[in-house]
Picture 1 (cartoon, helix red, strand yellow):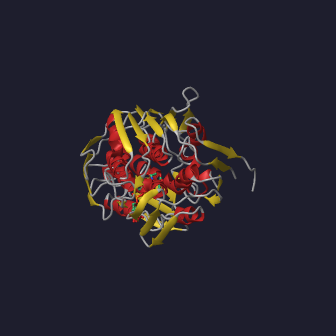
Picture 2 (picture 1 turned 90 degrees about the vertical axis):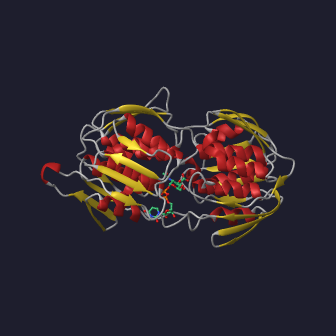
Picture 3 (picture 1 turned 45 degrees about the vertical axis):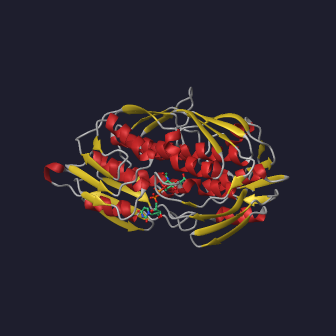
Length: 431
Ligand code: EPZ
């Protein structure tokens, strides 16, 4: 398994481009299953999760070709779906495979999808996805680790889902995305209340609308979808990755550097930018796609609570914890979305951070001088937090199991080296 070797202490300076958003490309690519026409998806980040999604679509008989020039374009075409199944072998490596359930139910009225297990950060059930599909007329059984879903033939409607009034008990991002895709081809209107408002959901809505879907309520918690008989192909450029952008903003701030993040959308980073400014980071939004972070000589502690968008993103919590270890004072971090998203804390403590975790709360006292050592990555965003800690630690930090970070950060080693970080990937075959 590859490792990252980081020699800390360098201030990051220069400009770094952001790639397309993994969490937008995933539902957007799954949405290609909704039509027999060709769909072109642009600005897809070269990260492992999207390779997995491509394999999954191909497994279902879709034709998938990854662009060569530019490498970030994918062409997908599913003229027929004879294999409406997402097998365990693929789903176990990527929970977001659940995003094929909605499109399969909409397009062919039947689906067999391996239940995505939990992951390091929590149990991550999909019960709300299933309940909503049942309200739309799906019959769902879960056994032997699989979801078997089908819509009974119903006269002229055939195996077609029907619109429903759905109120999500909890805000769920992929749950909202699954139902958006299911409802796009359902008979009648679907009203979805307590829907997620993440920019990635809005990006999917824009793409579905270009395919002929009738959806309104973008960016609000109530979405209305009027089902149509069929959808046609389109081309869609995925939005920039706001979490990658936020991660680099923290990197510039923590290393007392001066980092300009390009090809991003600062408007998607409102809560993160406000929190960094509260901590004393100088942030300058130069235009709609560029934001600059200059570190403060002294960072100030500031409490943060993770919330659904437009609140402070849970996917930025580990990165913020790394910054809080360097801030003057006590920062109270409250993680409200996932029940076990502090695995990075113990590794940062091994580097010398002063963090105590108590349930959903982590108390970070700073500033603490971090020192390099060997640490283990446990999940995608925890890995990012450990990279940030390594950038400011004295000596060398060796991060193991970086396959986690390769799932969601395109070329992170090259991008960080490009702005002065001393970081290299250490290949260790096998082990
Ligand atoms: C999406 O996961 C993202 N993944 C996650 O990003 C992100 O952390 C999360 O949203 C929250 O913003 C993708 O978009 C591919 P949820 P998702 O359903 O949709 C509970 C990353 O780092 N819940 O919004 O799986 C759930 O347990 C990843 O890129 C149910 O109880 O998250 C959690 O506590 C990590 N039942 C809360 O809701 C359900 O049926 C929010 O989960 C669904 C969710």
